[in-house]
Length: 317
Image 1 (spheres, rainbow, N blue to C red):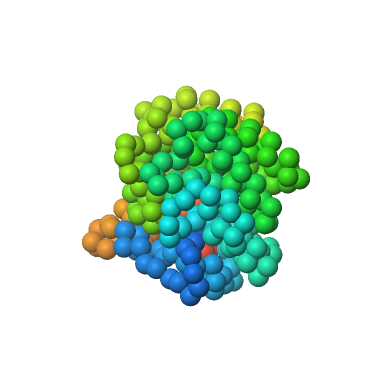
Image 2: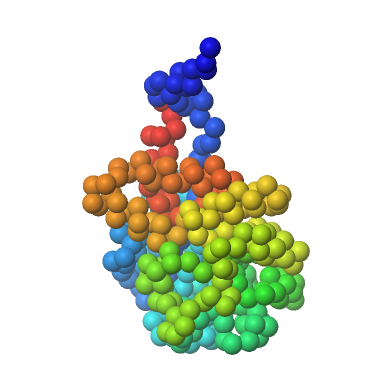
């Protein structure tokens, strides 16, 4: 006698009855690219459907998405002119955008990406010295916390930056603001469209001296453990799809909220398949549920608007 596994898949009700992994609306974090000015909306050719916004336009853009269940955003500043001081300036792009969003949507979780690559002239995430860079990263994080960021997320991959940020947050009386660390961020080829969107492509060299080496797995756990020991409240693994094994290992190893970043290249790759007629939009749900199945608590993804609109189509009768 043999088992009848097909009975579990014979029709939609059966498949839903036996489904093990479900997505929820509060699983999703929407990335927002913020530019200077007012009334500005810019297309990003390498990322179909993704836009850059001035702060006022970002407020309007997310309104209908909030109405269908958006809980969280993460902000990326895209300055018109390069200059490191803009990254922590009181009137900086992100420093102005945070209170604007929080005033209108007080329940919205506003996270901020903390790095210098979009502001530096060479597109690198450091200034040549690890510890001095950490001090600047901490200064940026502090400037975000002061104006109301719900969480700060350092993405630079400098050693010790969580320690420096926690010390700065305590100094300015913002110790309660959590650090969500990009603890395992790999030197990936999947970041190209993001660098186009954020104007952060390196002008020389690459980032292999500080972002993780793709063949390494055990080292990712070391990086994560170090950031937790320094005070990270949550961790981010980036990219998601090529590193689902890292997501799974981290979920098994650590009892801490885990976020996977479904990055720009993954997003663009899926849209290229759909545009060529080689995949239906079901591929988006398949991708997102695979990340959750691997162990991620939440997902940063450009597919967030689609997911919030379509979840019921895929997960209810």
